[in-house]
Image 1 (tube, rainbow, N blue to C red):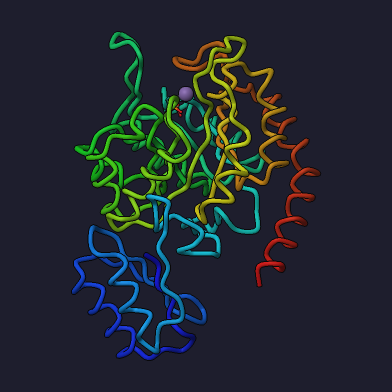
Image 2: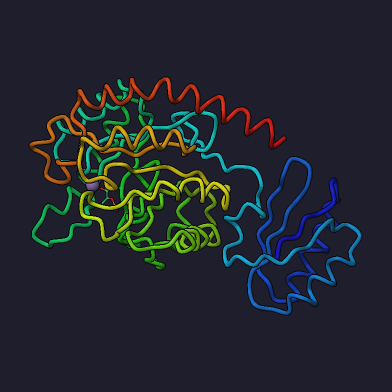
Length: 347
Ligand code: PEP
Ligand code: MN
């Protein structure tokens, strides 16, 4: 249920509503809007009786049953967009298209510092790089782990980029939280519910990638886990899904972006690298991300892709990255205009 209070309801009036909802056995989440308070109630209980009781309270404007199984991430719960502010000043979900760029894996100090310089010079605001790598084969490079995190932190100090890096296990959440600005949940872990619950308590923004065989509803349910456990700073990422097609590594479900924008207030970004699997396809998908109104991109870039220990074939080389970022400028100007129009229309 979502309960929208009357404008300027007093604290005592709101507390009385909260008390009534708790009596019916629901858990609550409250958001303080500019003009009114909205309360989300989740759990199992007598919805009809609870709604009737709440509607009888004069301080309640509307009390509605939500049919979607996710609530806190839904537009009904929060009509305005979530904006995630990073320490370096970048805002995801706001008025700028944000690019996150960097190698698939952190491989060495030289490699990550060079990547960071390249990413920053091109206009990215966030550096990506995996220190803990989910690899299909146990014999493949598994990541530099804490040493990789230290190198990422050094790259942040030198360039002012924020850091996004993957967390694979709930055992590593505290460690990675100490270094990263955004914790990435990879496609293979989208439904690792123990991990999602720990991330609800970590206090840092989460980049949640769509599982390769997951529906949009399942993605939103995973986001709901993180939010319901206390962390409302979630960024969703479309990274391609598995289909019968073999010409690309995955199939870029570009329509997931506008679908998610209709269903949720959370920021949505596109990962064209894992979607395509091939660097020549990446610039076109980057343009597509801007055109469909994504909030940003996460793209793999490597100073020397031929030598990359993972995902070299899909990583842009420095020249391609620079061209792609230059090419995006005029698209981003149009993006900004339409974002502004949307914001004005929402007021
Ligand atoms: C990655 O970002 O390098 C990665 C492993 O992505 P995904 O989880 O989308 O496969
Ligand atoms: Mn990768």
